[in-house]
Image 1: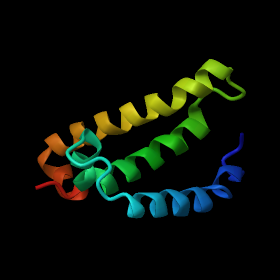
Image 2: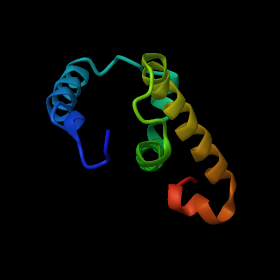
Image 3: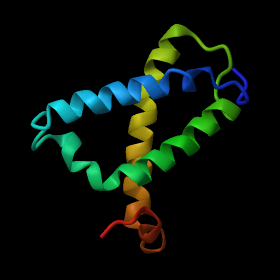
Length: 100
């Protein structure tokens, strides 16, 4: 799929609003979980994930198989978390990620 097509963005807003409303109605969900501990890193992980998505569009396999499409999401999440951890370990990039 060319980078200029963004069909997936059309459904993002309703899903995001619905999920936000659901989580507002149930604030106790996820207390003390691994996901809650990721909250301070969200902006850095999001920016890194967007960079990796663009790289996948440009350099990744085009017309890939179904298993690749299924594996892509967890691999992208893992790569984003790994990139965040590596960049957070470097003094010069720590400021970009707003780590303490």
